[in-house]
Amino acid sequence: MNPIRVTSWAEIQDVLFADSWVPEIGRYRSRYAFRGLSDANYPLETTLMRLGGGYAQLERHLLRNFRKGGSRLVPPVARCGGESY
Image 1 (cartoon, one colour):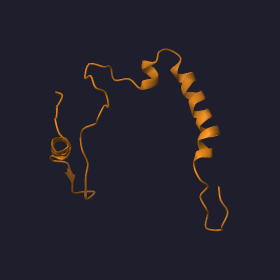
Image 2: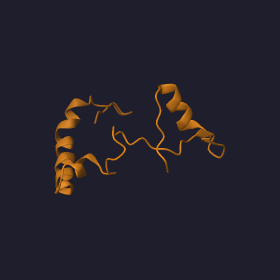
Image 3: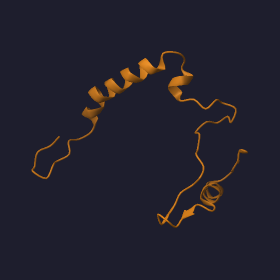
Image 4: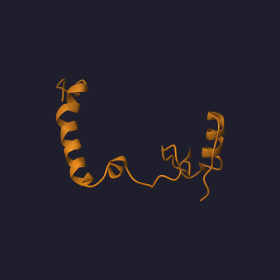
């Protein structure tokens, strides 16, 4: 597939959603994905992969740390019975 370059927000909306109506689900679904990189020559790798070797072990530690510390940043949600979790 050839890269498509756009220069405005309106243009990207037109390109992403052209011919994207899916009647079976009654929604628009784009066939494209945004890579999020400024250079189309970058390899298709995750940020962790680009950092170098051992990313599988690093990911495990990142997830563990998020579970430990990230939950402190999110306010508790009340359940129907009034308890929070």
